[in-house]
Length: 103
Image 1 (cartoon, rainbow, N blue to C red):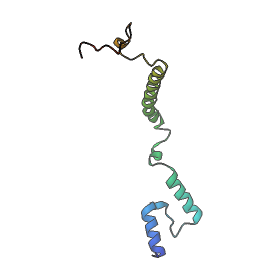
Image 2: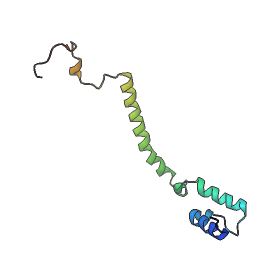
Image 3: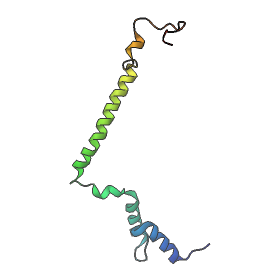
Image 4: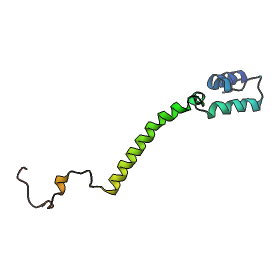
């Protein structure tokens, strides 16, 4: 099913908006528009030197959360019995051949 050039241009302009090739742009200009349209995320225009400080405050919560989880994981991996119930590890180990009275 062949499409005409006008139909193809209409589909491109509907899909890519201003980054699509138009009749008035050359190939290099349209490629740079397309490249800049695709490579940058949507929120990139909101990141500037004015609000960079607020973005750092936003990421501090993630960094603190990562540090706390990392310390907790390090403790668990180094000392695996540190957070367990001490009643299970009292002076004598459990005898598996004797059934407890409460069972």
